[in-house]
Length: 327
Length: 272
Image (cartoon, rainbow over all chains, first blue to last red; front, side, top):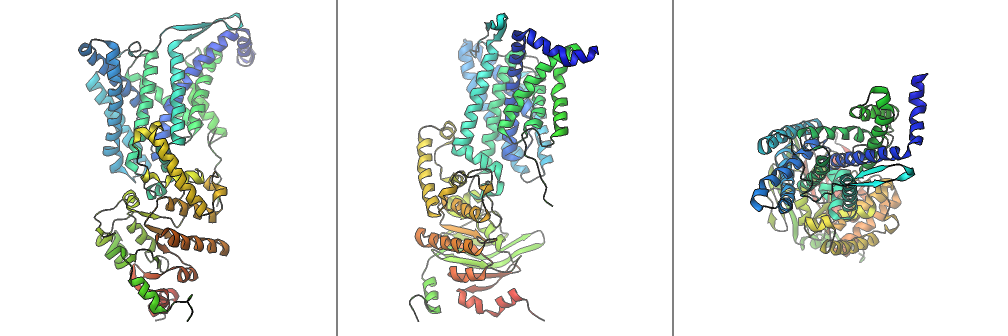
């Protein structure tokens, strides 16, 4: 009886009793949700245009953040000013992500064109291993601090007093959300309005047809991997500002897996909504159910269990179309 | 003899006077041990409608795939517009002026008619990637110019009413027309049509025939088409090449080919 009360009634009583705290929980959930969406978007873009499930997306986040921090600390003694160093390190890091995209296309994708999907998937695991080793070799394996201040990311906090209560928004979280929204909106505009975006959609829709109208596979692949790299860098910066830059960051990318299960591998809007949904739900579950029932730390597994339960009832995911086989 | 009905000699003379656009010389293509095309030579002349016919599995589609660079022939010389070709990739073929449609419609099903046709102008977009990513300045002006050209094509093929419809939801006949529109958007010199009327009813076939003739006549596009409907082939084409088991068995104006005993054997089967 008491357990039933803890599961079914108490959480909702608390939500109503302390609405300001509930808002705080929602905000925290939204922030991580937005970041999950960003990572999932990186997966979706690459999958749509090349049918490759890019296992390396997570390590690309780490690698991008490491490059930025590493280049910055290398440049500071030379230019003497941390802001100038950041202004130089930023485009250099983008250059590195572009070089990575070119390298992946030339050395991994091009020789493997037409191979079964699983081979390409294995190849992205190879890329992951390479980036771990290469990143450690060049920038060292120790934990680093994101150059939040030099990048001009605000670090204060904004206080609100809704419902006579107390709500605290960290400015770097606000920055993360705003940046994610700007990134996603510009990506959607790019995909839907520009010629290059149309070519990416065309390639995702029908390979043969895309080739026949003269869309060059290599150009689009480099472009798509570069965009995924830019998304990785953005995620790396904001997540690094929250939790520091280390190889452990890679695991947040696996949070994108349940997001993709829910949203589908091919849907941009699915990735966005799925990411935010997972972020919100896992935070609410953690605070109102996880801590009283399981003693906390449910965020590590909640998303996966949730995705499994959804898949039990909707095998096509939340946004996928029902597949009806004609025999 | 009426004006509308030229004699065989007149047709032949007309064909001979034209310049060669594409010339294939002793082209052979095999996949492993399977020979798809054996030692085939023929040419396509500027401004003509050239039909490629033959029974199923004769190598017609392979022939188109060789012409637009999907397949690399092991042997033979291909000359396009007076230039000998070494190796070929589909996107290079497009930029040289070769466009095609497919036997099973290959459209971007999730995209609108307009987007599909605009995608056909991929290689004509000149502005660099950065401008395009920003969709600003020159890239935007260029997009508007291309849009104008695409609207002309839409008018030409009478598909204004389905401009915004996702092509996956269109009836088959219209999908084929959108595919033709996308190929025309490339402003090709040589247009390859792989069974443009397959699966169509009589009315749709008549429409498509009219469009093919209009394209040839008004836009001056050279056309190579594969078609099974012999009535259509004989009506539309200036010259016909007949393939069977990957070999060329006849080549000439429709009247010649029709009466060629080897062609009749290939289609009806021979009793031994």
